[in-house]
Length: 389
Image (tube, rainbow, N blue to C red; front, side, top):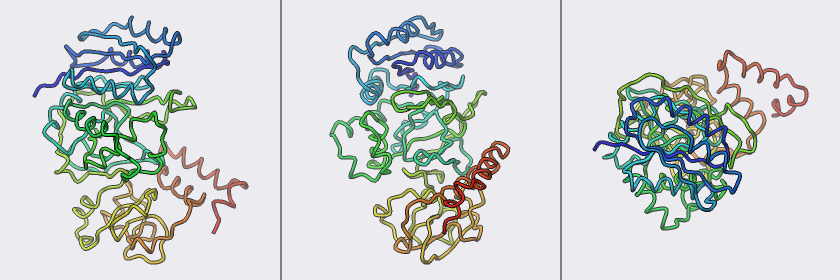
């Protein structure tokens, strides 16, 4: 099936953000005939600058439509309404207004939609490459394989595409008003505000056993502008490198991939077992970010950085990404394979958090973040927390 997804820009009250996104859209390659829809949530007279900007923007590749919602929807309802456009156009690309796109974002979306339409385990297509774990915001880096994608049981909200079928599967489930508190997603995600559509899609992926497919080189980046879910105007946290060259992507179906991560951004045991046959006798989950609710873990073993009374096998925490310490069997005691009942449950201490910071950020940005860490370690005020026993 040949896809021609509608590009749907989701806007509200940030004219500067919208102008930046539209400027990047004007540089799109390989998008002849693509329809652009700019959907603006209602904010009374404050919407006028955004509305004027949308109407005045020249879209050179196809038809353009500006939709000013008659009433204020809020973010969740607005995204749901935009996703529903997949029924009319066969597929959609959703872009919130604080994004910036690669010139080749449209071609990637078309290739991915065509490839993954038969794949029942794919719940959506991300245009963004995750560089952070979403709950702790510590760095995330998928292991390498011979494809240009990886999979996470977690949705993308910084540029995503859905076919009509992928969206309808979610919508059918969502319209039944499911109780997502009974589905195993992160407590932090569950605590997100009711304006979040993303937590519902996260629950849907877990419930249905589906995944989002992510590119290894991003087709969108994010400026994290102040808005509905952002109080501070921080413009660098979502930044990642963008693809600036054309390519034919090497895709792989989800069921055939050994680069699959669960809803907590932990490599699945199936993948670890593939690379580590010596662990075949153990049924475990990875817990390398130490954020899982242990009461929800149903397997008898974990591979974790949490302290434990006993452990069966230990690994250092030195190689990156952190799964590689297990996969390549680097001996140590920082990461432990242990029984779930042997784990010592304790609140995250300053000492642990600083250790995490040092491990994940060492050698990043020519040591700049590491030098900050070292100065904090020498701080008189913090030393009593960092060196606590």
